[in-house]
Length: 436
Image 1: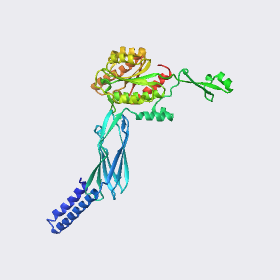
Image 2: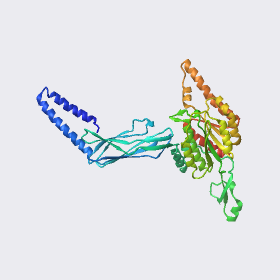
Image 3: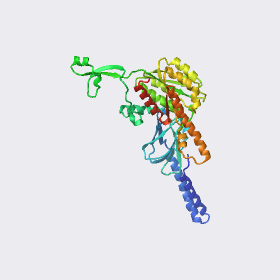
Image 4: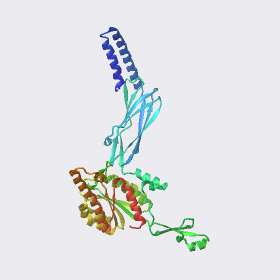
């Protein structure tokens, strides 16, 4: 049982009247009457709230949350009392969110139900624990509150951003991928693989008319080609300490994991084989490139379990294992980061070895906060010094791109927020130009 503010205000009025009765006796009898009424109403209020279990509440949410996305949660509340009630509902969300606003006032009539909706945005993979739904009920009298504890503690696993896959699939069906920034890439050269012969319709390329088939059927027939299939796309994720820098609450590692999941999804729907490699100071996980029906689930489970011990990344181990495990020529998307030009030079021999047997794309990241700082006008000597250092680091990223280009290595410098869209555009561009 809990005592709301109305209880204290009412008790205060009764006490004041009784105290004034010591100065003017007639008020004492009024105060005694008020005290009796107050006690009676208090007993009636308790009886109304405790005669039955009048409130039920259930939480509805997915058993898996999508990392970095807004995940919907709803609470359904039902009033089983024969009178209207005032509710204050507190959902015990996982403590990692550190939110104090999951507290909802609600009024329900007798026998009425209501639904409360809110969203949670996790920024870290793992298991999150929900507690009980605490419901504080006040009757129309309002002198006491009864607390109900509904639901059971529930664990929710936070996976890489699978909600983004649903967005891409929906837009692909409606042919609106450009709404998410996916460019329409013009195909370079001819298609490479014959698929079928079909009747000519307006808009078909007249250069593909099959004259022999047309002569036999007495109407125009055209050859249909499709892109070469079953190319290997391997996302290589660096889990070292350089990937622990955070943007908008998420680490670069988690942005890379989300992008690898989306790119694998797109590649599989383009009839390519998708795989995963992770490494840090030692080689960690390998999901063999494939395009079977269970491949996306294998990739999702692999990415979900990725952790780091902040070790220094060992590229020599990566090269040895890639050469051993990736048999045929593949497109390697390496998600990493470089603090400066010298850090890239230390890894350049290994990057060149990877690029000699495969087509390598090195993905590293723009520091948005540093660029915002550079754009500000300096005012003091200290500001000029800090701007010079920041500009030097920013210029070194351009130097890194130019150096990689000199050795025939593709690179992509992107902000973490735009990583998924930019890497998909780069993949589609390279595929259309048959660059791997």
